[in-house]
Image 1 (cartoon, rainbow, N blue to C red):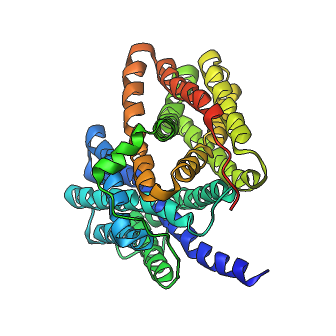
Image 2 (image 1 turned 120 degrees about the horizontal axis):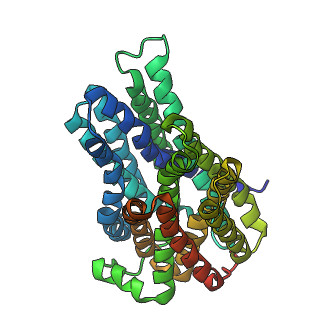
Length: 391
């Protein structure tokens, strides 16, 4: 291993720890269920918590792109980790509705800052053809934190060892310690960043949407996240509607989706180092298209399971490929492009809303039909993928 390779990995490890911290935002799912039970909340009151996450992406993504031009990507990531650590500190003082609302708001803000700044920071270490695979590996690391959150919370709620009265909330100090470690490690890691020619403003950021390819990428991110959140929401409902399962029985569908999404991220990190990005993207979208048709046409339980798994695998690398394509398309405006792409995560609010209306009108097949529109757009996007220049 050469000295340059050792230096690259020395910088890559703390950045990947930051990707792990990025996954802390997914604890909102299991935490909102516990808060609902502890405080006797209604569904609408409890659902405010996960909704906050996507709301802050809409508000903070583009301003973060502007901020990066002024203070740099690494400092912006460090700021995001500080906000995240603060959000994890608050639940140690209780689980009142107002306190948890503040905690989840800060968690969403910190994650919006982190997702906007961490991806382009990685491009200072890895570039060219390997950027998409590295972003995918980062998503795999992020998924580990997402997986662990429910198990840590359940351990805290059921284990016999005292947790200082925190019970399920022991999840927060565990993740807070990791966030602090990420702050310290990244803080002492030297990373050279290319400096923008001049600081840009909001108008210049949004003006990038006037570039046809950037607009296509933005809409692609919205479709990816819409399919992701939509599948998590709709998969259990499909099993209950088509097979008459209870909610406890049908909840396995969400776990199945995450399992294959994680498998897809891990395998994609290696496949994208060797395979053509457009061909792999086409294969991924084909998996989702077959799955959507299967969900619409079949009531057989194992076919439904296969379709959910195909969506998880197919959707696992879409974000990384689109995001890297956008960064490489306008390399002199990476900060602004990153802000716009992360703002596209607001699709996680738009799609479930449309799916809810369609589901009320036509059952869960209507909700699947909305996701199918997102898949059809990704088919339209596929031939427009460009091959990046090697680093």
